[in-house]
Image (cartoon, rainbow, N blue to C red; front, top):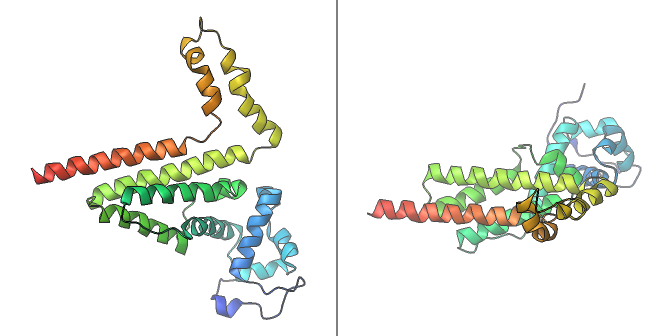
Length: 239
């Protein structure tokens, strides 16, 4: 059975591991993130993590309840990296767009980790800080609370959904990913106008666009819609 999780100060290892480092939550999470990048989800286990850290695998249970708890911490780390250096400018729409792009990019830097964590809710510090920032932007812009939650829900779910989708593509074996990318040219661009007139008409555009993420476009569409709703609701209240 895993040992109970205790406070950081109580569980910190005083003596260096075989690799000459002192264990901490941050070190374990960063090492796990590196292992995911190098070996994929199948390569992440308590035993392998212990070997990489030069520590008895059972020691890791003093920091995390198990691999799932560690996975949530990895997701929170990615959110923290997205938030690092971000600040508000007074333009809620621009600020929200920048934050969305940062979150999406942070996940795509670690596609194997993104596939594991984008659909999870960690309840950890960076995730909570991001949620507070998003809701603060919307409420500060004058969105009523119910509308702020509606836009927040659409924004965060869309951002993480695109992160998971785009990361899953990046995480494919190189051969499979190349085959998917070439399908637009190899198949769609060769369809006959007689049988597929709409596809044939836009085939060059499909070839040029479809291997790029649609997230920036979808994000702009969401924010434009939210801004219009805000203006319309504001006008209705002032009438």
